[in-house]
Image (cartoon, rainbow, N blue to C red; front, top):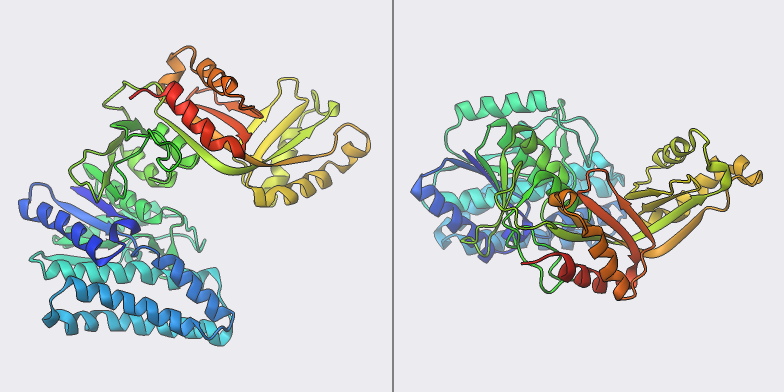
Length: 462
């Protein structure tokens, strides 16, 4: 059993959907391996549904025109994919969904209410529509698929927008469903439901997560994530011209690269697969014969000491320092605690061994808030002169140099620092975990592109 997942870019137009169905038809005809397939919404649809919901909430009448455009684009796609004689049947499949969507959007307009619960319900139509269209088209191409709304099986808490999965009931539901349903399943990604059957969503990378959940529950041999690049690349090709796809990475390397900006796969996606030691492969819908990148417990190719260079392009650095911090128990706990209370995500931490200063990398939009709450927490220490003014430095970026074999290879850090130093790029902060899997560097944002290309040339050899 394999689980295949196709993202929004793979189904961004009728032509792209046609290519995806050709890939599936080839697999289906050969019947070498049983598979199920998970789809995202068509490219851009989730964002458009959110926009329409907000327009209705704001009582802006043009929400109707935007909604009609969205509906027309789906009709256009299904009509392009299917012969004219099938168009009435296609309309019959889609009309109930469009009627339901119109009703809920109009409800938002009337009551001027757009809660996280309602928004999850609205965006769920993206996957429900794409899978209905694809399932209908596959039926007309000689296959025998069956539409599966994943929200029937994946059960979560009521954290709307980023729900947490109840794996015990979810796994049981999936196993029981597949015992009774032997046809090829076309599964909606991203969406789930509470025990009260209220629609929830799985957050960023939710469709990948759906594929991993099903793969783990079914003890799949392989999970294939189909996207628009040739796998996981050594760097972002938009920033590094010589970036190239890697044959394999470990789960840990993939997670590190994902955390630091690599958009091919998101860390939560891998957890169910990792627990079951199921290999994930990243494939390119537009270059299906290319092998892609394997993500597994052990890599199949260990030529590369450094696997990738990734970045978070825009961060702020918060610096807390003072002689009164030295040797005082609980300073770090209070610092992290007050930031957690205000939902400040900490991207990177570095602390001097003297304990005289702590630096935290955070999203720029949270810089002012972080400064305010830290100064409120430590106001007495600041009055006594034990802690100085909290400083926030903006217009910075984080670069992460990632590779599992770095821990066994002397001199990698030296190469990194020497390459940047030779090119007059100043390093503002450094962080390296005890695993030596990742060296993270904070630099000025205007040096990011230059630094990425310099480091790629210095430490990654093709």
